[in-house]
Amino acid sequence: MPVPSADLPRWRRAARIAAEARELGLSLATPGRRRRDVADAIEAYIQKQGAEPAFPANLSRNVEAAHYTPSPEDEVTLEDGDLLKVDVGAHIDGAVADTAATVEVGGGRRHENLIRAAREGLEAGIARVRGGVAVNELSIAIEGAIGRRGLKPIRDLTGHTIETYLLHAGKSIPNASGLSGEHLVEGEIVAIEPFATNGAGSIENGVFGNIVRFRTDPGGDDPWLRATYERFRTLPFTARWIEAGADRDRLRRARRHLQTYPVFVERGGGLVAQAEHTVLVRAGGVEVLTRLD
Ligand code: MN
Ligand code: MN
Image (cartoon, rainbow, N blue to C red; front, side):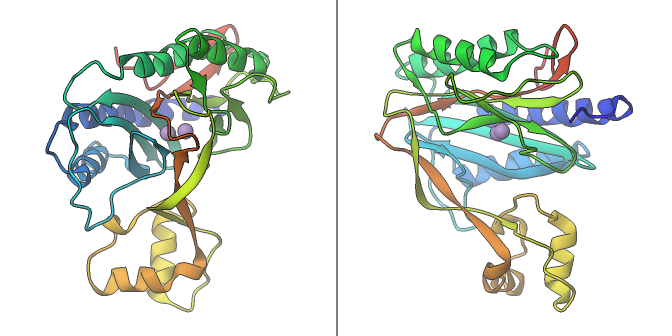
C-alpha cells in the first residue's frame, strides 16, 4: 500500500539516519573490535539523531547471511578478512528505513567479487523501479547482475514492501526470477536487498541470533511485560536493550510470548554479501531514500 505523501518527510528523515548509521557501522568494522561495541554504537547513533532502531543492528559474518545481533555478553571480536554485513533499521513513529552494506574487515580485497555482486544486483534492481513495474523485472535484473560475477543470489531471502510499523508489509521482492507475479505501485516504500553467494544459493536455520519479537499483545497481568510490549510492539528487539539483572531474567521467563529468530546460514557453507536500500516508488522511476549524497 502506498504511504500517504504527507508522511514522506518522516520516512526521508528516518532513512537518512539509517543510512548514516550504516556508514558508521562500516567505518567501525576494524580488526580487533568487538561486534557488540559496533552494534551498540550504531543503535546509540540512531537514538541520538531522534529515531529509534527498527530492529537490532544485524552484524552477520561470513557464512551467516542475516539475523545475528550480539548478545549482551558477546565478546567476539572482528578479524581481518571477515565478510561483515551491516544491516540497520531506523524508524520515526513507525516510518521505517532498512539498509545494508557489506565490508571486508581489514580493508583487503579477498571478497571484492562478492561485495560488488551484491551492490551491482541492488543497482540493477533499483534501475527497474517505477510505478506499475512487474516485481519479476527487478528479480531478473538482480539475478542477472549477480550471475555476471559468477555467483548466485540467495533464493529464499527477499526484499519487501514496508508500511508504518511493518517491516515486512506483504509483497516480497525475490532475488531470483520467476518467483513473483506482483507489481509495484506508485507511492509504495520498498526495501530491495540482494544477497550474493559462492555457495548453494539458499539458507538454513542456525543457532538463536539474539533477536526476538512479541507474537501478540501479552495482555495486562504482568506490568513489566506490558511496558515492554508498549515499548517495542511487534518490532524485533534484543536482550542488549533490556537492563541487566532482574529485567533480563523477566525477558527469559517471557519466552512463550516471544518469537525467536535463528541466524540464517548459507546452506552450502558459502560466503554471503548483501546490499540493501529502502526506496520510494515514483510514477516514472525511483527515489532511493537510504542513499547519502
Ligand atoms: Mn535489512
Ligand atoms: Mn530488509
